Amino acid sequence: MDGMTVWAGAVLMLLGASIISYFSWVKLRVNERHQISGGYSPTELKDAERTLRRTKVTWVLLRWGVLAILLMFLFERQTNDVLRLAGYNDEFVSYFPFVRNNYFTFISSKKTASISVAHFHILDVVVWLSIIVWGAWLADGIFRLRQCDNGFRLAVARVLERYRGRRLILYITWLFMLLGPIIVSIQPKPLADNPEMRLILTYIPQIYFLVVALTYYICGGFLLGFSILLLIWKIASNFSSERHSA
Picture: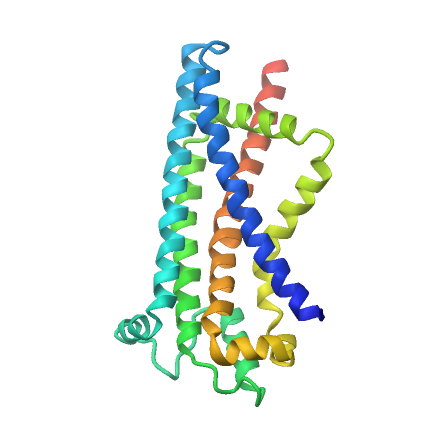
């Protein structure tokens, strides 16, 4: 098994881990709704229920976003025809430098020079989708941060309790998933020289670009946005605690 096969498997594992982690998070929040009512005040309970509603909205954004990406690649030709109406022609690749660089890296190699620009048009749309959807989600989360304070506190405490003794693994896995978009953005040159990946890129390139698109949407969108929101909440929580203690 060569390095590129290991890399492809690692990316798929990261995507699977991110999805499984989110399923566990949703299950955690649902269970909490049945457990917190006895130990917290009505105000704290109301805050936790707001967090639960936000989690449901997050799950809808994640599920329908992934479905939209799958459909775009499933109907790639039709999607590209629609994008042409918005100016995505053969001379235009992407608004984002890292997507353009990947395209030019692929076509600079004789082994992958026939790759279609339509894949990169869809990647460009996915990056925009990630920025708009998860940017709005993050902004709303920051605006409602105080309302979800108790929900965050309960969730973080439960996760840390669940992974007691394995926190280092949890942190490393989370960091690895956050680095997913960077990893898939710097790999085109080695991929073009790998026989197995070249076979995929020749006959079923949608598989590779689907993995990249999902990495952008899930890891670069949801997980990055959630990490930023969690960091802001932690800083605000510590600042509030210090102010009250003073």
